[in-house]
Image 1 (tube, rainbow, N blue to C red):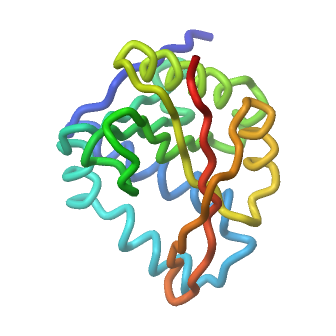
Image 2: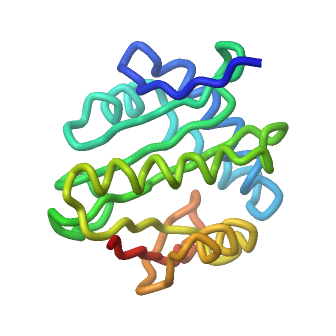
Length: 172
C-alpha cells in the first residue's frame, strides 16, 4: 500500500469537499443536531468557499493518500490567513481530518510533525490550533504532543454557539 502526502491546488476542491464533509460528520455528527450539522456543512464546505480557501495566500492544504485515494488532510495557516490574529511568528493548524477507517494509523501524528517541521523551516516560534471543548480524543492527542490550552473562542455550529479551546506549542 503506497502512502503519499501532497499539497493541494484549487483543482482538488471537489475531493477536498467530499473528505471534509465525511470526516466532519463522522467526528461531530453524533453530538450535534441534524439541522445544525446540515447548515454548517453547507456553509463551510461548499465548493466556492473551498476554492477560495485553496487560493488564499498563507493557507496550505495537504492530502495524505493511500493508493491514490485521500484518507485525510491537513490545513495550515500563517500570517493574515490565520483564523485568529496570532502574529507573524505563529503557524496555525486549522484542520487535521482523518477518515474513520484510517484513524489510529499514525496519520494525525505525521501531520503534527509535518506542521512543526514547516513552522521551524519558516522561522515560526509557536504552533497553535483550536479544538472543540467536548472532543476528548483530540484534546488528549494534542496534549500528548505538547500543546497546552491558552485561551478559547466561540464557534457557531448552525444556531448553536460552541466553545473551541485554543492550544499552543512553543518551538525550540
